[in-house]
Image 1 (spheres, helix red, strand yellow):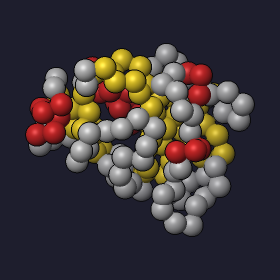
Image 2 (cartoon, rainbow, N blue to C red):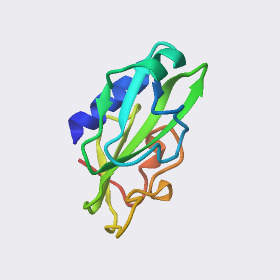
Image 3 (cartoon, rainbow, N blue to C red):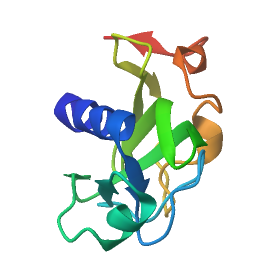
Length: 132
């Protein structure tokens, strides 16, 4: 899990990101098992054939970022497994991976945007979050 989060953070720091369409901040970009495609331009990311990172089957993700000219240097990322009871997250200005308890959901989406913070920094991880 830590490797997936770290890889996603590195990718987001140095590239634009695309799923089937442009990625929007603080939204569920798709179903579990999503893939992140990137490039130096939005067109390259959209046309990429090999993903830079792929969530494991059953893992949902949310990314908060501030984009300028399709580039982002500040972000927070959150993940949760469909059968999991914890949300994991970290941010570009943090050296910790955080978690908080989250009841298992009976149906998709298993990770709700409201379960995560709304900013693109370590400020998301206040009350209720525990650092590893």
